[in-house]
Amino acid sequence: MLHFIGRRVVLMLLSLWVIATLTFVLMKSIPGDPFTSEKKYPPQTIANLKAQYGLDKSIPEQYVTYLKNLVTFDLGFSINNTSRTVNDMLSDGFPISAELGGYSVFLALCAGVLMGSVAALWQGRLPDYAMMILAVIGISVPSFVLAPFLQKYLGLEWRLLPLAGWGKPEQIILPASALALGQVALIARLMRSSMLDVVTQDYIRTARAKGLPPWRVVSRHTIRNAIIPVVTIMGPAIAAVLTGSFVIEKIFSIPGMGKYFVESITNRDYPVIMGTTIFYASFLILMNLIVDLMYGWIDPRIKVSGREGS
Image 1 (cartoon, rainbow, N blue to C red):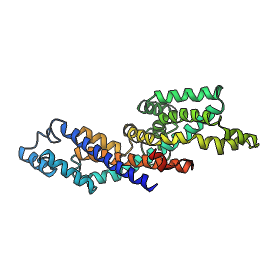
Image 2 (cartoon, one colour; image 1 turned 135 degrees about the vertical axis):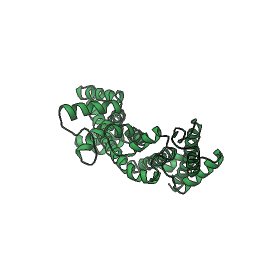
Image 3 (spheres, rainbow, N blue to C red; image 1 turned 90 degrees about the horizontal axis):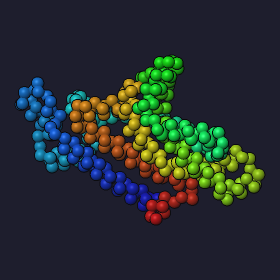
Image 4 (cartoon, rainbow, N blue to C red; image 1 turned 135 degrees about the horizontal axis):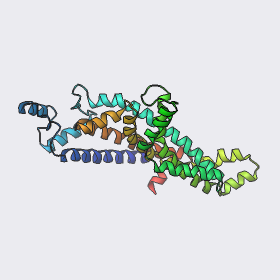
């Protein structure tokens, strides 16, 4: 286990270096700089601003400084909000984005596992067809299309839920549902396929032959083993939810990282763009490691170190 974690940490650091380098190169390949459009400032003022943010140095010098700052977790000051550091913005916005993402992933996991299980247990019958039709709709409709639809009917027409905002429990339902739908569909289809495979295994037949109640066979044997493939997609699911939340946060006026990130792209706020990218990359890589370690917890037969070495 320790050997596996050590190898993964090395791969994580290498991946972060590649992501940091690509982000730096992409930002520097864009013509101009954040102060190009500031025509109202005299040339000397613009020169001072470039010197303040290190943009007057050569590209190699900027790159070395950038990596040194990353090692010390110093993401720099925002160019658009000069009084705030990128670390401050992340500490303000990320907890809200993470909370929204957490609710969405939890909703997607619960609804997806339930739908997939129902579809498998009633294979070829009405519940199966209904669940799979809903899954196809969920995969086909993007979250940014579903969000206004939910606002129109559940917010404006029927007045069941608030249109936007954050801070109250009822304000979580619409954005979390819009974010979760696509992942619900993927989990439901994967869970159905896995359940259909598990129910044909010998240990399921043995459990039934022992006279165990159907609900116990399903809950203790079928679902527990069928859910293992679902865990494998939780890393990408978390990534999809967190990156998709930027647009959803904008639609529902949620004060998360989406607001800062969209504004940073519009204003060419390099420190915010690069810092946010690195932070989210680190978080998602860490989530993937945690998901890998969860395999052995869910099914003791799976040896993490052995699978990694094979």
